[in-house]
Length: 57
Figure 1 (cartoon, one colour):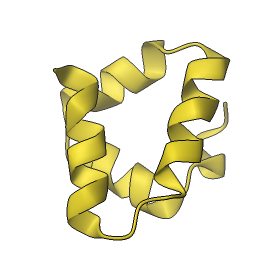
Figure 2 (cartoon, rainbow, N blue to C red):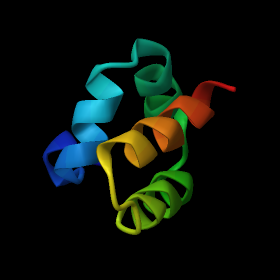
Figure 3 (tube, one colour):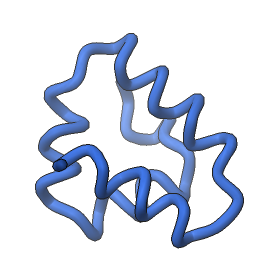
Figure 4 (cartoon, rainbow, N blue to C red):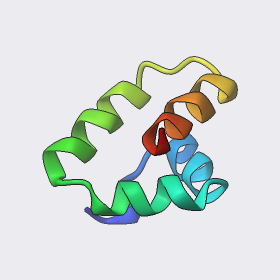
């Protein structure tokens, strides 16, 4: 997946969480697409950060 294809909020949240970024990079394409689909439902910055933080828990 091209990083330029990420939703802006997801890219920003991943940039602030190195562990989540590494986890995202190790995901399969279907896993990445599922996460991106969930991100499109997010309504706030805090909600996005929580979603990204769950990648490492």
